[in-house]
Image (tube, rainbow, N blue to C red):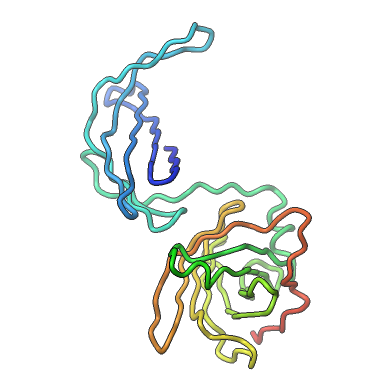
Length: 235
């Protein structure tokens, strides 16, 4: 199953099988309403084969509608015709050198992040850094959020979920005197250069949860937030 979203338009391709085992191909196109889309799942047949001249496939009926709901850009659910709702997750591949590149002691990974909320993005746009203290990949993670001028905003203690590049982070019990305590929790999932999750922002004793999205800061740019500049976290 492959999914592409441009603006509010979703396009999905599904390769499957008929009851007799014959391979088949479906597509669905629809408009997202919030985080949900329901669209006809259309079957196709014919089309060009290897070595043949150009030939368009033709629609060959529909088994019904498909419904997709998204928690964020990496997780959601899908319900095919005649089936219960099932969880789906974006497939993420890791290179052979993944552990040595990202699990090294105090190596930092940086992202530019903002809540998925137009009224809040300008106020919150921040640089997020996550790094490990132990170098084992099994604990000792810390997340830091900094303003774009490089000042530390929040530090959070993190745990990695089942070796999946997914982190659950909570505000330190003893934040520094110069830290703001607006961010109380972050849940982050990383897939290649993309980062998605949720962020809990506290104001006047009220906590609001926003979807969070970001992209890796890579290339020649040197991150403003360096692991060597961060205070060590008590473990």
